Image (cartoon, rainbow, N blue to C red; front, side):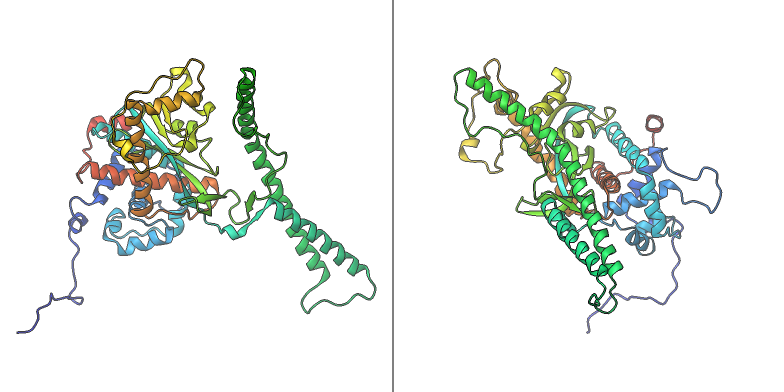
Length: 471
């Protein structure tokens, strides 16, 4: 008796079921997304209120389409358009036979950042009503580098730009002199003196603009470096007045000119060269920030994208990105990259803000035998201790260790899920404003995916109370 195979019949006509839901499992995330978006009652869509021209696609349909595709690792508008033909779940979102083209999807994405932010806040309010998010609690903040849609080989350094400008000036002068000669030697076929002079002049203007932008960026960074220098100088001067010899070299004021290796990228001007991965290599990238709940939900409560290469200036903005309607923040965890005395004081606001637990030195993820032993409470810092000394003490207390431990258990796994499960590793758009829209959608999609899991795959109940709260 021969082997038996399931019959695959591609010729017999099939009838779609009366309800497309029958083609999908009951606990499919697509049901959760569509029903939840309907409940959210988002208002900030950019639509044609006059009703002129062709009929528009319903904005909630397009929002559900973007959320589901981002949650399943599809970010290109062309790829999303193809999914409306080939993916049953996506066809369900679009009503079975609607296929918005890639241009419609792209325009909707670019015009509706306000709606995405509104949906981000309202889905968190839904999570709170369902009992998955506490009104009061802590957050952990961190940043991750995401590759920009630009090659680092399209960048030029401040020093190299200056050298190239000098070289181009010499070549332009030489070509002008050549044009003034009566018996000048002809150029290669297809080349003319005016074209060659213009090409070098245009390149010189572009390099001069690059150097000017680098100088403007450095001026902003120099102010922060100057504040750090002055703060360190005050501490060392006080130590000398008290008869103590400061350790190490004296701090130096920031240079008046940008460092030679500071760069500008011609493909995406607002992206930056940043350390990526474990810090062993550099990428043309943006710095994506997130504030994650530490009370068990692992939902993203706030975030944004910055072009700052490090997190030194991001503590206060990241805390501020959390809507007070979503979370009354009691404490904030962050790694050593966020620490500065001014940032901690600004966030804590003299005791009126959340308590900060920020590492003041790099900590190993490995736990030694000594780390396993029960520790006695450390001695409090002496009167007049610096913010750094107080923070070091706070993190050594049993309460501080327990709170700070949540940082590695919350925000770091969230970035891992976004990069590996959602496969969101780089931006497709260019410019800070546009990549911020992509990050808003990625974090919104993550929250939907996470809330779907917290709800056990169940649908969101469209209660009158919830609709009133979100409306």
